[in-house]
Length: 440
Image (tube, rainbow, N blue to C red; front, side, top):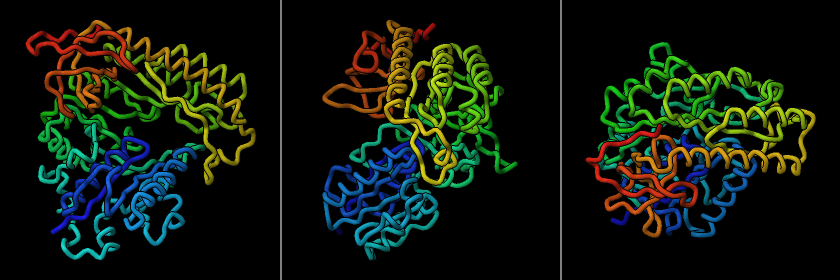
């Protein structure tokens, strides 16, 4: 019996990446053959993003490209853009699956294909995520082990459309998260990334759940995972008590903490939950508690009403913090958000100039990070390979390239960090018995 072929691709955040992997496991468990998105398939699943208008455009482009690749195929639009636009994305050969229905995607696809060979998966079959038999074939192209622990957001920042696309904050049970970590460890992953839309709010909606610190402690206590990375922490959710967890060296010394703006007045218009002073104190606390910690951030430019003085204030604050890397992006006017109706929309040419200045500072931060690590030894988890060169990541978020004697996705090995290469450092293999020298 010929298996139907399904191809999946992801735009946007680590939560989307985790969900795409979960959907691929569901399809594999239901008898589909998972193939790379560039391959010919019977079903194309596009997990869309809507964080900016650029993400919207990319989502539409990929959906259209899938239809051109095989006009007879079923094209599934899911994710945040599909959730916002809804049935307007539909068509005779398209199926729109909103975020709330992602766990039912296989049954919905089966229904459109009038597929009788395999019954729709029950809930217990969907949870075959935890079964090694449902491992995604390597052709799907996953490179990092993501585990979604939380979804949705109860913060309503004036610029953000994600609460409309994702709904209220809700948490997966710790047992489910732990089991998923165990599965990935069984499959050979040395590192897992714990992710969520607003991860720091984990457990807040249910008094019987632990908070994020409690979840991380249970993962460390109840699994054999060698490295745990926290994907992102909102400054307003940060609890200094969690820093004690980093005494366990399995927690990656990398914190991504979105600043969004370094100007107090811009943060107030965004309705963020902190001031620049509070943010600076938090960063200082983290740097004192976690030796050699890498701190990266997100910064938005051109928020409505942002004056030259506000931008200058924010720019100087960012330079003073000395981030180890920044994702800089221009404010995107999103219909349905309060910011879209604010006066003082900043012209695109001014946004571009401000973005360039911040990207130069971001590049300086990465240079400082690489300089601190050059000539040191580190542990690298390998993620992907191209043309014989492997790419991986240290626990401090340094990108490493190399040609290790033994490598596969998820494998951890020791290297000596050497000269700059591309956007990272070259890593020369060292013998495992050589003691690891940590960055100082």
